[in-house]
Length: 401
Image (cartoon, rainbow, N blue to C red; front, side, top):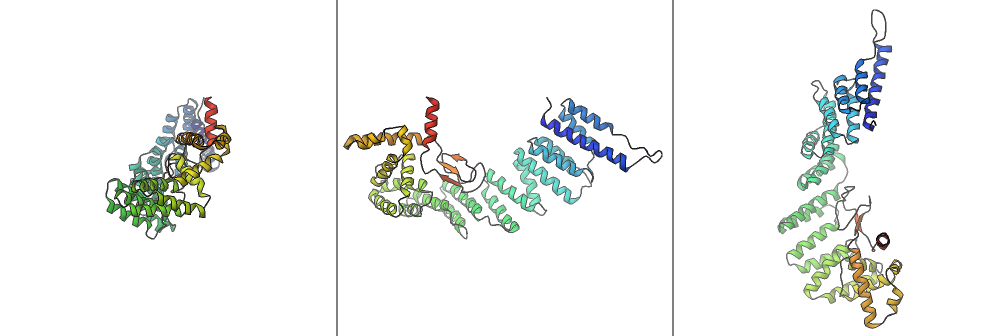
């Protein structure tokens, strides 16, 4: 059965055939007998290839039949774009290379062909080739902005953050649009790379650049806290983690577990208890965030946190499908505590099997915090779930039963 690409090429051939007929009928005529020029037999050959589903041969025939000139070049561009959008990148590449090979190609058309070919390479995953062409276009062409945008995406994939910063800064100047958040994350990436190499001096410098004259991303605070923790500066680490939580940010899911570990190692959990109680008196709605973070990270042993978890469990209606909470709540003493501990342990195990973060732009979900969404490629759009998705767990349970 003929494929969609077969019908695509067939349509193009028929269009060109109609154009050829119109040109012969109303344009150029034989000077001697004033008879319209006959339909080019090459169209019939091309259609024969298509009817036999020989699309590669049809494409070859098309490229030979239609010479690239001022009248047909836009047809070639359109065909190449169609092939690229359909994922037939090898054909798009051949078409655009065929255009570039024309010796008398105008400068503007050459830039258009180079831009199209660069997009072909990018779609094909040939990042080095795409980077070379986009770099050439970024030096001075009407595609400078698009080329720099593409270069930023390439450098992000290749994790070449310094090059991404340079391209982003040039793009800011040319486009007039602020890329402050994006570039700040580039610096944070460099800082985290330096941390992994234990080059803390460089890491601090990169964080400073990330926040100098740019939005103070919470990622920068987290990175600074990690540097302080790694260099045994627990005082600075605690101050930064407490600030993240005090500001009631979504990063409590990242900061609270680190806070607990440091306070436990320092033997100062009473201090954490006091600060959390004060915070929750001012912002009672944060109890759910504290409880969820404690459940998914299996944090326990700190009274205020345990109280938040208990309140969360006893007020979660969906949990009645798992356990008789009324019976648990009616229990006394050790029996009650033992029952709650079992429920909590089960929730921690269940929560470990479901995503913890979701992109607010496209809905992509993941187990860990990703600063750049792999799906929509936007920065700092992931947010933690504020409750265990019991509905999905129940659905999974019913499917396996």
